[in-house]
Image 1 (cartoon, rainbow, N blue to C red):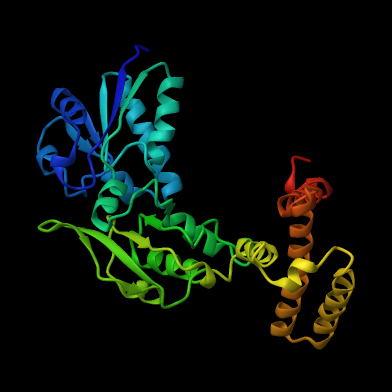
Image 2: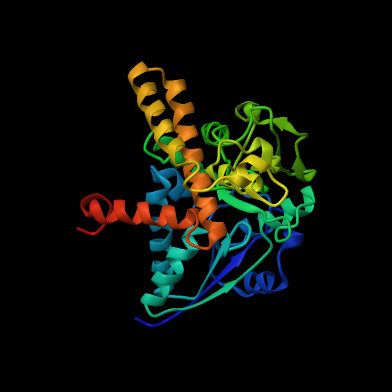
Length: 342
């Protein structure tokens, strides 16, 4: 089978003028262009060309995205057997494009050459619209489908989101109501219900649009489509009470040079009895059968772990990361049948 060349280009976030010169040159010279989807505001100049096809029929035929992406890859590989191909995707091909990841490795394995031309992505436009600096603001990006999968895995999802509420978050691909609802449910596990967020979309006339700030618990009431993203501003650290990191930061703050005099005086020995006392109170709460009381007493016991770890950190012996490492590694070793390779 002769080798051919695959060029992957990004179509930008919607406005054709945001395509890069390199991407436009590749599209102009191509004799076979495959669009991941023709349902995109920036492809009107392409869909009328006879050399351009889309994968929209595969979207209709595939029951899930898990089935869709391999089908797209197989189609491109079939075309590469007889000709060079330009595969064009919305946004930036190296930002959240799972088909590009799969296609790149598959094409190389089949002996073809691959060139990926980066482009302007949705994150760039969102940053320009909202005033975010993607680097200095420490912006986190999350695929909405990951949040939906996390919600669907409850109560066996670990209960803690892998995001920091004290840094901005951009959530992409909030493409339908059920996904928006799942995103809202996931965020409500870490953010106050009244926390204000922005919904970013695309209008064929106005271009990129930003909703006025809405309360987080209203997200399920907003109209969304395949170009919708959500921007979640950071919360004040004093509101970040549902994340474990903040507890350990609080313990460190109380022990700091200008912290609480009582906490600064404590040693492992001086609060040794409190560990036993709090453990007994946890046991009493279990016996009482009141969930709210048990949650509170487990928190009091956790405070003891935070203080002991902070005291040890100041002495240079260990810190809370060593505590987590020790217990997590132990659990993985002891349950290799579930958590390992055995």
